[in-house]
Image (cartoon, rainbow, N blue to C red):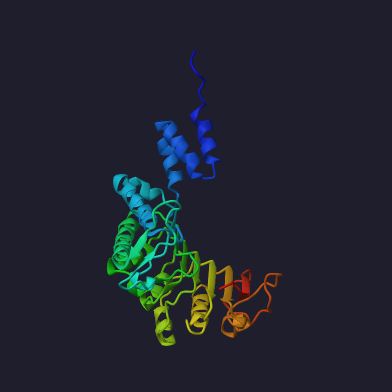
Length: 319
């Protein structure tokens, strides 16, 4: 007597209701080769390479394993829609010098992992190279998050030029609609200007970035003369030092550039009682009063849509 089999359509429905649980999806792919082509786009839809604070061996293994998968099966790159890239810390920022330290994140029960300047330089070079290799193989990413760990900084001036170029090219992909940058520091004005030329971006989040630390307002304004933010709907700006990083001026320029499309604007100053000092920003926005908006609206910008929701305030977090 033949064993009963579930119709493929029913199995597909079960897979669709798995909430993209990777363990569940892997089980289906291993159970039947006929399911592989249906499972793979869901299995690789969201790639999270931001492992947070972990052993550098574990960190680089995740990147190099994914790079190897893409090299063996390039079609997998077309399935990725959401990508998280983690910290790219330069060896100098560890402060080891000629000495050595024990890794605070080695696997429990394993021998102590000693970090030296040489091992950190090797990790940094390999990681930068793998990122440069991976990004061109992901043509359909719509959501990109570069760094999301508190107290983790990506210094743009420490990243090798090939990685600069790979990231810049990646930001220009028309598939990209959501972009989040966290603690990306010392980047040139050209990077910020490049982001603001991307008409396909609908959500932009800049948190604690020092893209413009030494840039004059004249240079800022000239970088936006041909801004293409005609589809930007959501803007989030979070910073601890808005004046030092020219964030008031950045906000005003972006709001002007996206005046006809913006629907949601959030501004927070972190750990600072000066969060209400928003004269420049509030003079450009129309606020719909609601419980989440602590302050009254400023003058109405003539081009601002009437249904834009604004959240202004201070965000106090433990240091």
